Every structure is written in structure tokens, then in C-alpha cells.
Image (tube, rainbow, N blue to C red; front, side):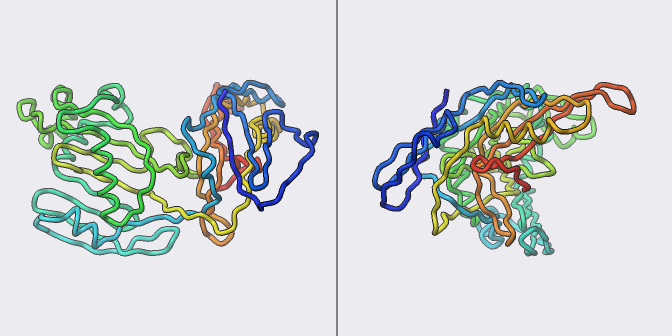
Length: 366
């Protein structure tokens, strides 16, 4: 059982609540003159069946969180500073060409630049940052993110430096091009040149990839998959169209070698600010969350079956009526739907997702 303690700062008056009003069995409150402490216990697995919806649910919450520091917050989407990008990632390189365009996004339009350098380096900056060298392009032809775990180790360190040193330098590179970095969570693959040497590219790509004899220790590198954290909780990076939160879909990718940062791809990155007016944060028990899910899927008038596989707690930036981003503690819920197709008569199974506010139990639209 994981125990999560939430401290919510209230007015400096004593608040008394009758014990009989506490209807959630896994919630307790401690009180003093300045603080209400709400303790919520989330099981590591929740098992139940409600209105035909089966819950055999793995519950994922961060192991190391300081809930005393939880504050209601807002978020803003961050974008790279084009001038800083060119002056840092392009420093010391001979510019071959530079094209300017306009990129559009939810926050309006921004200038977009596409730069190519004599040494094969390419930089695209606008709504996203995409920086890569000719060397990393050759690695990318052999490194396939969806199957990387079958080929490369996801632990251990290389001869030129630790992963801690590498991620610190990547964070510094992000700051140098205009991002507020904050907390980062990451996983990585060890790209050993001896393994890459054995991989066979597609026939059409053979001329672009090194021959076996050309690979050397200098080609060793780390491939990082990075997500943001805020207040010790991972920041959700999916959306309604692509809700899954697979490791390989984390929004920041980087390749780091003995030469430093060799690739940096940043499509989404947020900055955060605490709200001036703070209200206490009170998470509801997971049984209430389960009731919300069961009401939605248990009342669907089909023969489909629903099993709730997983629920993970995230900080979710959600657009409000003013098109600004509020940060909500919310569950990403993964559900398997299965049944028999009414037209073909064939069995089917697929995964669907719901986003549930961890305080109110309301379904969120991102």
C-alpha cells in the first residue's frame, strides 16, 4: 500500500470536521492551527467489478513526492528562442542556408527557421526544436525506437561519462536555447558501437550508414527519452488524439556522445507558475474514480466488455474557458475494450483512455 500525504495550507484558524462526515475509508485528516493534512492511501492494485466493468487495475503513483509542496498552478507552452538556438547549437559552424517561414499553433503564429550547415548539421526552430548532426542521422537509420529495447541495454554507462553528467548537459543546452527546464525524468538506451556494427540497414539506406569497418568507440552514445516533472509528479504529454504515454513517446529526445549533445528534439515543453490564490488540494479515493469510470462504460448498450488495466497519476495541463492552461492532478486511465464486431462477426480488442480529475472525479477534455 502506498501512502500519500497532502498538506494544504489554510487560514490560521482551527477547522473542526466531525469524524462521521468522513465517508471515504482511506482518507483521514489531521488538524492544527494552520494546516489540514489529508492522507489518501492508493493501493498498488485495485480489484473490483462495478456495473460489469472489471477493475484489475495497476495504480501508478510516483514513489518520491513531496506533497507538502503541492500548489495549484498554471502552465504555458514554451518555444525555443531562434536567435539563441542559432548562437548556441549553430556556434562555430559554417552556415550553408537559412530559410524563414511562419509556423502556426494553439498560441498563434511564430517565425520558423530551417538552417543547414556545411558539416551536415540541421536545425529547425519555431513551434518545435529539432537539432541533429549528420552523424546522428546515420545512427537513426539503425536505431528504431519501437524495438530499441530488444537490441540495446537500458542501463549501464559508457566510457566518456555518466548519464547524470549527460542529462545535466542536455538540460543546460535546453536552458541555453530559451527553455525553463525545471525537473526532468528520463530513461535511456546505451548505443554501443559494437552492437550498431552488427545491425543491418535496409538496402536503400546502406550508402548512408557506416560500413562495419568504420564503426569505432567514438560512435558510442546515449539515447535519452525525457519527460518533465512538476512538484515531483510527471507532466502528461499526450492529448485526445494520441493519449498513450509510452516511454518512447516522451516529448524530448536527445542523443549524447563524447562530443556532447548531438541531437535534440523538443516538440512540447511547459513552464509553470503557482497561482496567487491557493485552495486546499484534496484527492478523492480511487474507489470514487472507479465509480466514475463504471458509470460511463457500464451504461453503454452493447455487448462490449471493459477491463480497466492501469491508472497513472499525472500533472495535466488543461485549457480553460479563457484558452489558458490550468494544471490539474489527474489520472490517465487505460481500458481494454473487447467484443464481437456486429458486422463481421469477428472478435476485436483495443485500448481506450480516459482522463479523470483526481480531485473532482470529472472526466477531462484536453
